[in-house]
Length: 180
Image (cartoon, rainbow, N blue to C red; front, side, top):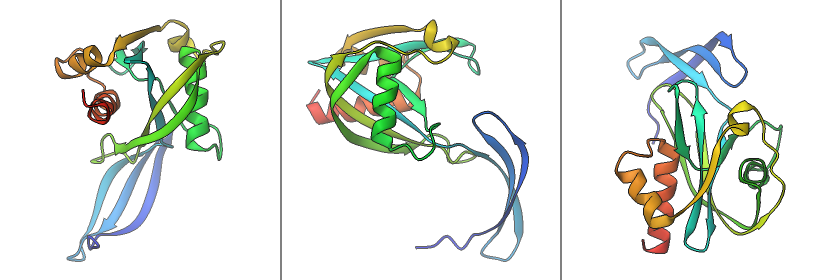
């Protein structure tokens, strides 16, 4: 079913390192032209990286929030034409020093569809083997990497310790998969 809204044009306001800011114009089903603020993002991946009943989380500084947050290992799609599975493998190696033997798509989500087109694909990764970490940037160089029992991580997601949407959704999807 179509919405009846038609995209007319985008006007670039600013192109940042990761995202672009646009005035996007649409025609409504009634023929009125409207403008909406839109942030365009290349997309990202994240991993519920499991070792037995434990899940790996990272705690890193997030500039917009001005605090460190617990999150799933994740990264943006910043290598041209790189397959999503290869991206999540690369991110796990960079952030937690683990290479997954199994990679399975768990869920795809949009964080903030009211203003941003970013999608995030969350993968369930297992059979982890240790590899050298290759941190990318100061946030990763200074982050904490820690394993938690999946039950504890889910509790952190539900009690407000974890506030990152992809992490909450990924943990709950994995918990459902494992009957936690």
